[in-house]
Image 1: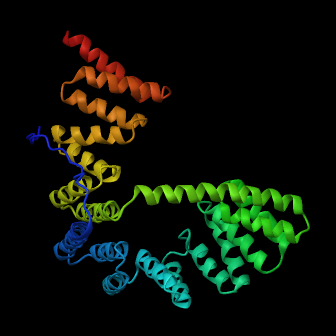
Image 2: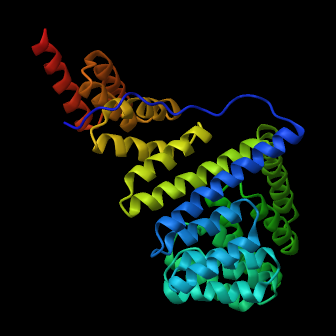
Image 3: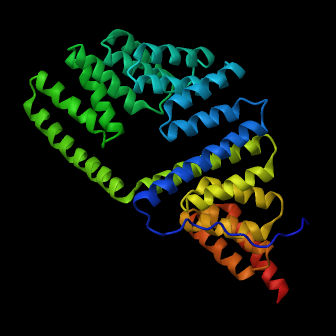
Length: 360
């Protein structure tokens, strides 16, 4: 068995409230740390395009669109067949109002992967806003044939295109489908208000308006709550955590597991609610039999998602490896109660009960 390292817990960021110049300095330091971390990946893996794509996304998340575009261009010089890079560049072009360029870049995405879901919907939205309605309708219908992942959004786009074409009866059905699939879709409800009015159905229009106002209020309340609960420092910490986690994933994909561990640990420190980086850390520690290091991470995962039976079962088996049989049985019992049809949880629980009986 591999040597056990001493326990190591990822600690949450300080709760100290910063204001003014100190707050700006902390935000700047976190951004610099995140960018330095991904630049280190670029230097460590010069033969790969992955770090170049990663650093572009980090710059984009911090609002540095010019730098993001420059890194994406470097990435494409190394590997011109990356749909994720063209997609990112297209979204930046769209945000800048460069619609022709956005459509061209999404065309490159489809050249590389013609069946990639979501891209035709992106292009269709631009075409609708540009008044090219017939082309947009064709693309949305193709998107609906490819994937149901964005079915509500695609039906909304179809309804919007027909509405702008003044084909109100054709617009009605996709709008109705959109709200059936996603009852909280406020824009689709608003589209139905117009469609029903144009079709001479004021009662239906009135009901749709009432529903629109209801779901819109929920959206506005949620937006206001997010604004109250988020501040610039908390947002920056999360973005920095994503950068470190991305660096860890890139290192791990190339076999640099120690470097990956350091990045995932830093991500966990910055974002106490990030389950993804903790999942990767747990896998790393379990695969290398560093069970005492895995323990606090697995406990954190359970605290983040206490109703997840798989996490409970995993923690139970980890307790078993550390000879904490009572704790192990308690976790497996919870996993069984949460998912009684799972035969594996039942088998593991029985196995631990037998182990405890033999040790008496």
